[in-house]
Amino acid sequence: METPETPNHVGFFQSNTARLIMVGLLTFALLIPLLFVQNLIEERSQRQKEVISETSGKWGESVYFYGPIVKVPYKAFSEIVTVDEKTKVATTQKSFVTDYAYFFPETLKNQSKVTTTTLNRSTYESTVFTANMAFSGHYGAPDFSPKNIADTDIEWGKATILIQTTNLKSIRNEVKINLGGKMHTFEPVYNSENDSIQALETGFFDASVLKNTGNLPFKFDIVYNGSQQIKIVPIGKTTEAHMTSNWPSPSFTGNFLPGDATKKITDQGFSADWKVLHLNRAFGQQAFEVLPNLAQYAFGVDFIIPVNQYQQNDRAAKYGFLVIGLTFLIFFLIQVISKVRIHIFQYTMIGLALVMFYTLLISITEHSSFGQAYLIAGTSVVLLISLYSVSILKNYKFPLFIAASLSVLYTFIYVIIQLEDFALLFGSIGLFLILAAVMYFSRKIDWNKS
Image (cartoon, rainbow, N blue to C red; front, top):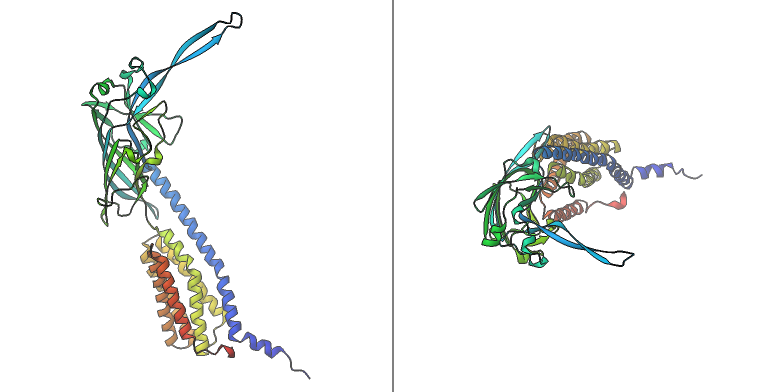
């Protein structure tokens, strides 16, 4: 009579191998709630971006500055030849249109003081700034020779000063330019070709003074309320800019970076200097007919938050699988070493507690700093799992070990989240040490009896 196979099946399901398989499947199953947590973080992050965009839009958007430019109208002649079909006689008609020449300054200097502040709406906050920008420099003599334009065809008395910019609605002062000792007021100009780029333009002035003197100084101030970014086009033959701010985390952007010798960044803010020569960029000091788009040559500063709270929450959630896997591994090794049976339901409760860490983290972060939220959520989960493990393991030695291990693990992940340049290096070394510890503590387990 053959022995029934049932006991062998029961023996397998009670083996460490079967328990390891079930714990592994449970670990993968917990990826589903982790995915929901990541979706929640993305949803809250998107909501934050919408609120920041709305708040910043009311205060002021990014600042782009291209100017000041001397704009001089001139007559451009053309000839139209018509032939009479009957007489075969050709007649020539001469007509003209008004085109414009644009002349950039010989020197352009800028002094900008940018003061940042925080706007709060509900649980969200956005960083905005007020930029006090002072410009000065001088123009040289206009040169119409490239187009062979006669002096009589130039309308010197209808010249204007032009500035292309963004964020007109958030200019805080009346903008007047001192041009050779005479004041001229800028007025807004509608740009039908590009709604995102707006313009300021003065009334007429006699630009023949430029032709006669070849040196016309200017200076003016402009104050912006803005957010996110300031960019300036270096249209001077020599362009120099100096910017100071109380923003401690600037991101220098654009086609030119500030000089390292003069750049200073501290916890109280930054100061930076730029110097751009006409040899450094691929455009001249004048243009005819159409003012070129020189945005690609602009330089400036992004006023950004390096890692905001939702980015930190997202980075923490990405380590969720690692935390769950290592915690289950610790409990499994304790189960094997101590011969205490841990039911799959108990593993599930521990796993759900680990997932709850991330929902606690994101909800508390919205009302405090990420560091405080991480400490509160981490302490709560470590205490919950440690107290629960006392009832499972029936002693205090292993629960204390579990509490210490989880504390080290959460601390390790927090440090990785705070690091930027060395996150990969520190994380790789940490994982190597964790693997070495697991190999050490499991070295005496006889897996052949499992």
